[in-house]
Image 1 (cartoon, rainbow, N blue to C red):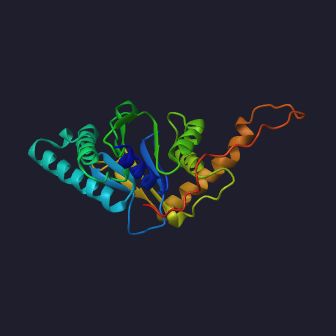
Image 2: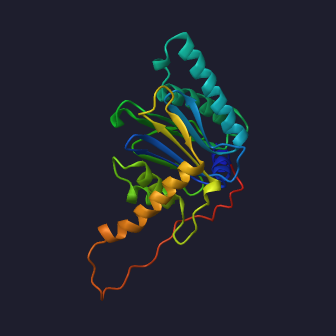
Image 3: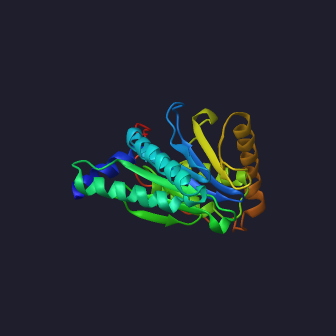
Length: 253
């Protein structure tokens, strides 16, 4: 079991991190992804989104299984009966069974998120390779440097952020101190917007994403002047810090 867990963790650590966080009108997904053919972020059902890191073929199989589960239950019973909690339980059973019974565990980490009628009704579930389920509140991060990314994310996150501010917060968390942010063409961004009719999932790309990034950059420039605390000019700055772990090479999904 220990060997399988170490194997899965090493595989997941090679992937670039993914961030999921609540904003004013729903849930935002952000992932550096240079591939235009392979998606880390996808729609599962009307109000439910899916994000993953690790081996693409493995989490794509999970995503397709979740879509079949949602379609069958929504058709047999009612569309409102399909929930992120139900999908998280399904994935937990599959991942746990594979981890305990198969020779090789799946090298994946998954987030299933559902947008509700109000922010209090939103749900974010993070699942690990062994089938463990974590009910996240407000933010979630996974991937190679998840701990460092989550630390930076929680430093800037607050309830009720606008979309541009939430995007800026996510990009800051995903960027190592002193590092360069990925270009627009290498970003995968999507939202679950509670104000959209019927299907809540929407990908953000092209001109709309560029406008949001410009707005986010403007907010980032204005923030220090508005919120910078008063400091003693003679005081020496504290030591610089950096996240632990190796630099992500992007060789994983």
